[in-house]
Length: 483
Image (cartoon, rainbow, N blue to C red; front, side):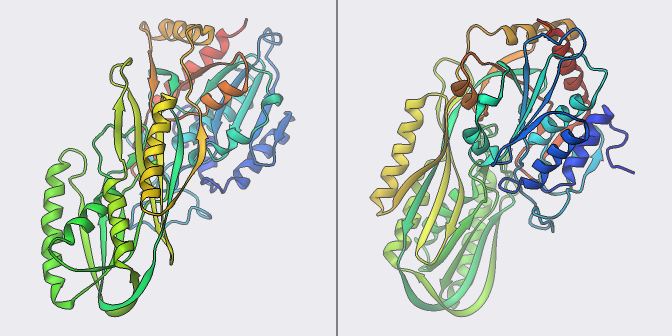
């Protein structure tokens, strides 16, 4: 028996569960892409699969809609792969372990991939139906959205006829998203020199943080483990001499880092002092982040007396200086839209190799000049410390369109169904709409989706009844787009 067998709408949740059986983390999308192609072949539907594994599936309009303007339904097939430390799961091979509790679906300690598996499930359920009235459809599913919108960047949009574009990558029922921030990954490469040293080796792990999406949750006052690690290392040097072997934290720069770790050498007699210091700092952080991250925990593991190649003192200070000064969180609120974060930064990845510390930050802004200024600040900080800086995965903001017949029609349908207007909002998180808006002249975009809680974290949950209501709304919207 399928876990989601009793969830409505049955066909949507059938395909969602099928998707969850297939590993589909960013950069690992060939199998899910081939699944979509086979779906199209089995139903005799025209399709395109490009060299990046992006897929478009075409379906003619139903009777009476044959000559209606084409509608694009768009989402992405990749997911963010995060898990709790105690969970054993290989995202490259294992199916997600789904469970249902009340009105929510989760994945038992891993990310669920509701962002954006629900878009794929909606698209497949519509393509599979012979009863839903709709215009000609282009169901367009991209790859690697979560690591810089790479599929959208590389896609040849000339194969798309539609100019009415419904993106299904929202996670807030009752809202129509009509604008979003642009962004980039700012990557700092700090060279380090090493020397030989002896001492008591300890691992310092900062864990128990809430984490979350670096766009949607950046205004929730959640702590970033990489930044806390910098604070720990800076503060510790005031009381205890230590040598630094490595720092590491996070896997995605668009996820607020939940865990970070440093490996140190100290004098054996200092171990109890370091433990006391860690306990004191843990207490202070739990007070500072009351309401968001009361579970912050500083774990110390004694790995015994060892010899190690440690960072030269100058390199160590440069790394600590960087972590203390790298921007994190909201940098500026919008001056024109109340409550909207305009510009933010999140240091989501921290890695140490033999000769380099690499840090990657997700930079977001709805104002191009502000995003560039923040990137320049990161570049200057990096170069000041003798490092090199690069930008990857830059994508444009999705600009507000004053005249939007699609938005107006979708507002009208919502009012007919629910007796009130939906929220029409700009958001800080990045969507692929901005890239397609730049690439496809005359594109009219709106984004919608069901409630998804704590995306990009192991606590991610997809609302069942919300998925049903958004499905019903989407069907009514397609029905209304006859001319």
